[in-house]
Every structure is written in C-alpha cells, then in structure tokens.
Image (cartoon, rainbow, N blue to C red; front, side, top):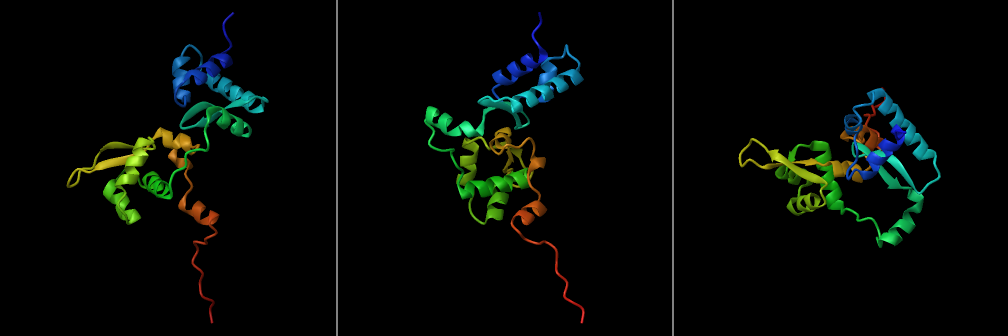
Length: 186
C-alpha cells in the first residue's frame, strides 16, 4: 500500500532545513496533479491547526515549517536552556526596517537615512543573516547593495515583503492622522 500523500508532504516539511515552498513540494511530488498536492497541503494545515498536539505547521519565510505551539514556549526554552529570544537592538531594528522598506540599498544610503554611521549595525545584521549583500551599485566607488533575507522573513513571521505594514497602516497604529485638516470657512 502506497503512503498517503498527506503523510508524504508532512514528512517533506519535517526534514526540510528551511521553509519548504509549495513549488518545491509540487516539484518533488511531480507524479501527483498539482491541484491534488495543493488541496492535500491545505488539509494537512487544517488538521495540524486543529490537532491538540505540541507542534503545528505554519507558513513562514516563503514556505512551510514545523513549530512548537506558543503555549509550550516556557518548557521548550527551559529544555534548550534558552533564557530569552535574542532581541535586536533598537539600532538593528531601525537599520533592518530601512533595508526592508528601501531595498536594494547601500550602506551610505542607510547611514544618511539614520543620520549615523551604520557600519557596525550592518555587520551585526549580516552575522545574524537577516540581511545579505546582493551585488554592487553602479555608481562611484561601486558600493555594496544590501537586501533582507529569507531568514528575515522567517524571524518576523512573514511570507513576503508585501506583508510589511504600509506607511498608512503604521500611522493608523500610532494614532497619527495623515489627513490635513482644513481651516473652517469664515
């Protein structure tokens, strides 16, 4: 008896070292119709979400990954001897948001936007693999160009950069009204 397609997909997600994209799943299971693979993946996601287990499957970083359920975080951290999630400094977050919203971008452009030298912060973000060098800008000095990585997406639980909040959404969250009030007519 052949293994169930749902079990095969679950196994592929389990062994993948990075978020497993739908395209890669379809490529691996090319002997099955693409629509059947997609429907089976959706069924798997629904059953994983509804099951009362310690793990689940989510879509993150452009693919699918197994994660532990958030309510079990204290015990997982204790077991792994993790005091807390390594947090990014405010300088790192500021630099990372500039790269995310303005990419591709050079170090001098980042520093100009931040109004401070960002060399150390970029180095830290490169070490954490949240940004990457993607080439050189065709301008004087041929400066390096930076972009966010798939790890950036996974770190923030995003599937793509399109999921980043827009300027209007950020203003709404912060309670700022972007509309210009007109003076009353006299």
